[in-house]
Each structure stands twice: as structure tokens, then as C-alpha cells.
Length: 267
Image 1 (cartoon, rainbow, N blue to C red):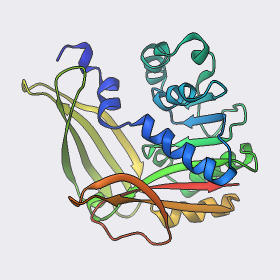
Image 2: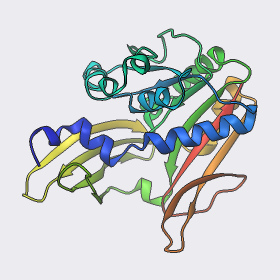
Image 3: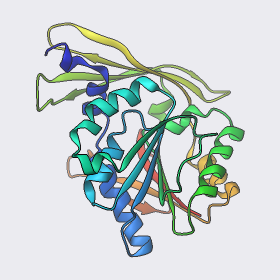
Image 4: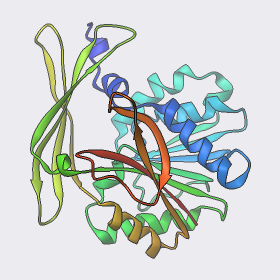
């Protein structure tokens, strides 16, 4: 694998993100609610804005705003994700360096905060402030979509390794490490490492200091913020007892060792 192929942002997109599936999911639930497709999307904590790029590819009237504090990630996204768009698509994306708790943007119909990114907000006051700001900017036919994970496995200090197939180069190992967890504050420190077959690696390519928010806490804060309808989407399992990537609305989750869910909220 060449040095360019070992770019940490590129490896992250290969190992962690699936913008096509995420936009498929968001498009589906918005259309189910309102009988039409949305046009305006804001990706909060957007990083390299891969989801923004996928959104504007979908339809010629789609517009996207990506909001993030990290100028390095935004610059990488401009160079590697937005440059792959055609001129007309590129003109319908704006990447903004700013704090989600203070930065003003045009009003979207959908706000996304995925990959547990909003867990960087450590206190109830900060997360409530964020939800209230999103509620204020969304129209009545708007949608906030979040994700969450949990289960006993999420509390253990451990490393999990997953083999990643690289369609453009050498396969590699993605390692997720939970390095610290404080049961009193629910704060965690986690790292992502990338390891290669020649014995080299990118250790701590990404590190996170976040709060492990529970679904009851998230739902309660969304309710306080004024969201009227909050739904949880649970992932199913295939015949091999593996996650199938298909999320359906549920009233009760399963006590799995590890689970991932989406949450949607409407003003």
C-alpha cells in the first residue's frame, strides 16, 4: 500500500463510513413521513463531508451544508470528496468551519449528526443546547437523524479488529480501542488504529474523548428540546447471526452484547 493510500482520512472512509447507505436510510424515512424527497441537508460534525457529497449526487435540486470545527478534515474533504463532483454538484455544497453550538447556516430540512459525533458534547446542558438549536432551525416538516451504540461490550476496555477490503489497494485491519471509561461521568477515550500486512501501522490515527450517551438520555433531551416525535431504528440480524445493516423502527430493543441504532426526531 502506497503512502498516499495510507492517508488516515481515506482509511477512515473505507473502514467506518457508508454514505450511500446513510443517505438511502435518510431519504427513505423522510419520504415515509412527508411523501416527498427532501432537498436541503446539513451534516453536523461533518469531517470530510462524504455524506454531503453523496447528498448532492442524488438529485439536481439537492443542497448540502457541512459543519465542522476541524479545518484539516474540511480541507481534505474539499480536495478528495468535493473535487470528485462535477461543477454543478460542487456548487450545491458549502463546507463551514464552525461550532455547531454557535454557527449560523441556511435552514435545512434534514440535520444529520452521525458516527456518534455529537457525543463530543459531554454534558446534558451542552447536548440540550445543541438539540434546541437544531429544533429552532428545522421547518415543521423537518428531520434530525442521529446514531447511537451501546450494550455491555461498549463499557469494556478492549480492542476490536475488523478486516477491511480495499477495492483500490491492499486490504488492512481497522482497530477500534476503548482505552478508558469512567462510570461516574460516562466519559470514554477511544482510538482508531490502522494496521497493514507489512507490519507497519498508523497508531491512534483518530482519538475521541466523548460521553457514552444512553438512548433514554437522548430521547429525554430531545423531548425537552421540543421534538414531538422521536423514533428508534434497530438493526436486524441475518441467518448467520450477523448484523444485516437494515434498520427498522421498534418500541423495544434487544439486550444485545453490542448494538447500533438510529434515532429520528421531528419538530
